[in-house]
Length: 114
Length: 115
Image (cartoon, rainbow over all chains, first blue to last red; front, top):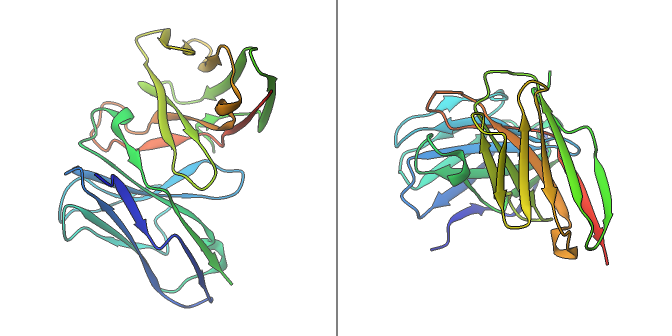
């Protein structure tokens, strides 16, 4: 089992460019999350999904869109990147919302927007 | 407005001694608290948790204490080892009693254990 994987590991974008971050999990988890971590800050929830075909907004959703077309994949899109979106992005998954300690995190995607 | 606060950005401890990491929260409805450990270039990994109906939970060298009246929890590591050097995040279940399962994180405390 690979657990939670994220693609790419690192990316540099210019302001206004678009990109998609891919999160994949092979644990058959229902719930998936996208967080961002800025320097000196904790992780903040961007969007989440409680099952295939569902998405919902988290704490900081502006400037991002998500899709969960397949249970194992959760995509995070930036339509027009801004320097304020420079951050490290973490994806996580869990079987359901009952037991937070079963939330597994991916290794992160470091994004730099110039 | 931060709901989970870790006011110490860093902590340095000698190997073999006790490490105490602190966390405060503002929302009295939080029902579950967790500590995550994070190494550079890796995602956070779960360390230990505590339900709001308990005041202590122990797992090997790690113990978490919860003081609900003070809205304060702490993580004790005894004895500290150099491999414990990492960033430690305090987190609370963000949707008490609900089903979102998301976590609200503090800013983290960087622990350095010196040999």
